[in-house]
Amino acid sequence: MIFRKAKISDVEQMASLINYYAEQGLMLHRTLPSLYQKIRDYTLIVKNNKIIGVGGLHVLWRDLSEICSLAIDPGYKNNGLGQALVGKLLQESRELGIEKVFTLTYQPAFFEKSGFTRIGKEHLPQKVWTECVNCPKFPNCDEIALIKSNDEKAIY
Image (cartoon, rainbow, N blue to C red):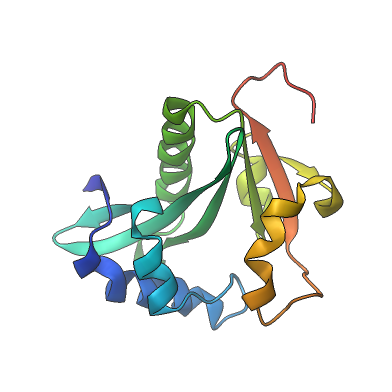
């Protein structure tokens, strides 16, 4: 099992895994074009040439990034891979020098295990919402916002 950055040839498998959960209402759908356009954002967990985990780190501003589209193959759930992938994405954000990482999710308890704290969506900067216009749930977003600081002393 290895962690690596996504490649163009991975996009269809990534979409299949992400949209498996989207069809269940557990996360938002991702189109092939959106995944191709943001391919550099994604980190994968691969076992025997099969993608068993995917997650994105989308940089929004000099001090803010988002963890998005986090999905683990159903056959590999509940064994720490999701938390390990979040850890890799948080490490990447620290290496980039980003102060805070947020997520919008339907699974807040999962992210709270990684030290994220719930916040009101109104506390996120306007720049966060630029992509939301394309979401079928816009303007009635029902995802829960959580944030984590790479500087544990920071106050939100």
